[in-house]
Length: 223
Length: 99
Image (cartoon, rainbow over all chains, first blue to last red; front, side, top):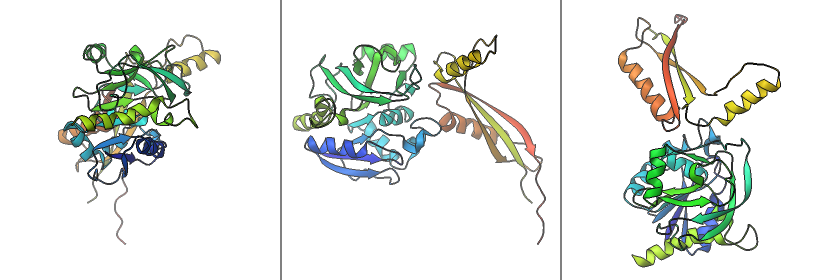
């Protein structure tokens, strides 16, 4: 598939996301926040980092970038979109995903290898996994605490829209240990941890993260 | 004729039910400094918008509604924050000087 990776001013993990998509067998297209086009890609990744310096709120200014117009439209029409870390924050600010991400409850930046449980293996970003499978990928955030009101949390859980949860001690105070969620249609996924940093044996905790990017291939094959 | 300017303030605060780690840290620091009787601190943001007002120095209902819209769409995230808009003061402005 042709996978676009958006670079915002302040994106850090765009090149790693491109690399992960390439290793998973995709053609990668670099997208620029300032251009209101998706260049005909089949899926989009919003990478991690500190877009616009996290000014105002994480993701709040990126949400109004020119590229977000066509992206929101495409996402609403069913295009697979994955937001990682800052990308997750952008998706919440865009209201493509419910809830918000706020400062870690312990007030410190966290950077560690994190075990996750894949709770929904039916999305275009998690189809390579088995439900209940445990994976280890890096987690690094200062504002990664997922919050939403109780009713929203109940809906997310009952509809199977919690994509991944933290295993063990809650690393950032996320409600119900939520590490990632998806929208009603299941095509938009937000994830606080970083699977793109776990796609090669040479560096990172292993290759558990690769499945997030190979999942697209499985989805494309099924079409 | 130069339009008079008015400062409009938008206060943004985390919703009461949202954990505010920054406020908590400030509260802890105040206690360590020996300030007693501080039961809690919530930290928010204050925006001061300099707006062109009507000729009489007032802001019409339409302009105020626009500020509400700014506050709701960009300045705050309604999922986690509340906002409050108030007109602070008319800003005295120097008359245009002919060259």
